[in-house]
Length: 305
Image (cartoon, rainbow, N blue to C red):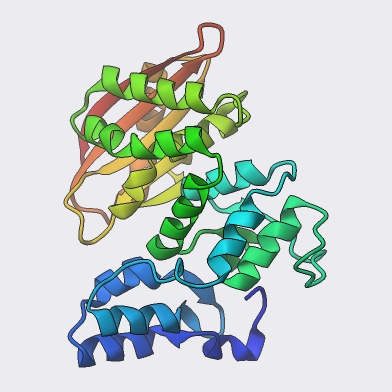
């Protein structure tokens, strides 16, 4: 799963095979893709879990078929391990972020762990995480596996994180409704709920909390961090999936500045130019955190390409 080389196409079903299966059994490929795509190897392209695809075809329903396997119990045990930085990595990935990881030190020993990287690397081998060998980053591959992680943390003492995720749909609705005060208040609550377990002292950690707060957006959006655009990099861009009618979101995060300044930066540096192929409405969202007062503020504006 880290470097399959010539065996890549045998790890699972290829995308061409999945398209053939969907056509034969009259199943929507886009939904199959949303649930079970996410693994990718240079030699084989996109790879799907055979068990999940066949279960979905047999039952005529899309869902999480991982939690019925014995490895699910292992997932709960592994992510509960008390290694420095492990919880932060899991939270970042739940928020759609790819995280740097060193997979070289892992010795294929499923009982002896020396670091968070060892645990993460094992989860890659088990298929619970996908690995980008070029960027050397790990991420949660798709909706099926994301739901498995959610079930695991619900039973593992992650109450603050679960509260943030449960509130994420309301936050997305408030953002789309351009309710600036509600958005600022909801993000404030996520921050306070997670301040004991998450580092929160710069724009990078602010980004992690924001991604967690917008967790439910993963259903309708693809999150891109540090997207090259105009004269710089847009902090966070939510690109609507083809099945979504929602506008694109361009988020700029500020630390001890102003939300208005964040909006101005989006405009002055031409961040929306990265969406030139996108045809539709765009919301510009500026979020600022005042460290002294421990307050968030939000500014939202419409922008049409």
